Image (cartoon, rainbow, N blue to C red; front, side, top):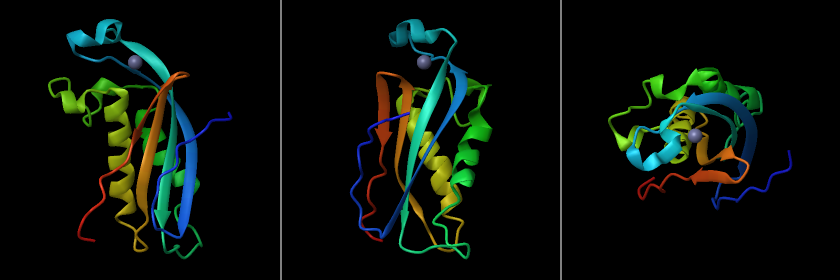
Length: 144
Ligand SMILES: [Zn+2]
């Protein structure tokens, strides 16, 4: 699939991008969501950008497959609302495209921070339909 991606500005020497997709059902539990309040499914297309200055012992910033598996294995063919990362009572945890993008960033960043060479996730793009996508970029830490 040819897709144009907005780029993210950073000072790291290496940048890696991984595309993957998964199928999942969800609903948005709020009256403003209209028909999206009903359970329905999407094929989610995700693009993840990881950056860093150092590589691991295998010469990787991060294994492409590992990056995919952290997210795909958790969400593929699931009802997202049932995942404990989402919450039907808290709008900051409804499985909207925006929250999906941030949540995917949280999953990836948590895993990356366990690695000695400290790669970091600088951007997550989640495409929910052919005409709709969201970008999540973490705020830069002031004291690093
Ligand atoms: Zn939807």
